[in-house]
Image (cartoon, rainbow, N blue to C red; front, side, top):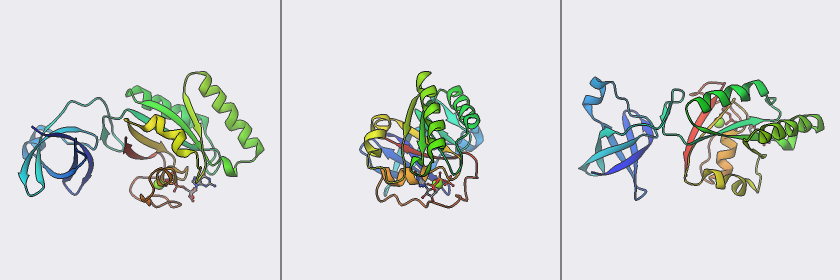
Length: 206
Ligand SMILES: Nc1nc2c(ncn2[C@@H]2O[C@H](COP(=O)(O)OP(=O)(O)OP(=O)(O)O)[C@@H](O)[C@H]2O)c(=O)[nH]1
Ligand SMILES: [Mg+2]
């Protein structure tokens, strides 16, 4: 039976990407509710096609891991986005993120933004942090808005992996995604309404 991965969930419908890349709109199976199964974005599912580009999810496969906020499953890695300034870089918050992410078996990659507006002192602090975290085995990348090297920096990490972006509001997550994926046109510069201020997250894949 056909399988795929849920890529988005809107108003009771799930959009499942098939192996051929096509996205198909699916309903959840009624019995899921009774059994307490709630399909998540990222789930690998079996579907039965009802014709007319419509289908039903009949099985949710075992998850490798899942996050509660936002509710997503089967994440390989997390890009932990921190700005050097505006908002100021926080070692405390970074350590908290690392603890949470690693406890559910997600590989962290630390990403520092806004080096273009950081002063000498801020840059020195950031460089010391980079040296420290690289020294204990983490991958760290540093970037800024419209960085022409962003693709080259990130693609080796992103290719073939399901990645979640995590970070405080205003650190530049949407800006990063807009640079990586021309045409995505996520809103930037505002506090996103749906997801709250501290630890907003977005998913992308491959
Ligand atoms: N100078 C500079 N500004 C940046 C950089 N990255 C993001 N910004 C700006 O910072 C502001 C916030 O960026 P967003 O991409 O909206 O931040 P976000 O992390 O998506 O924030 P939420 O959606 O609220 O969680 C915007 O005005 C961006 O233009 C950067 O590297 N340098
Ligand atoms: Mg955003």
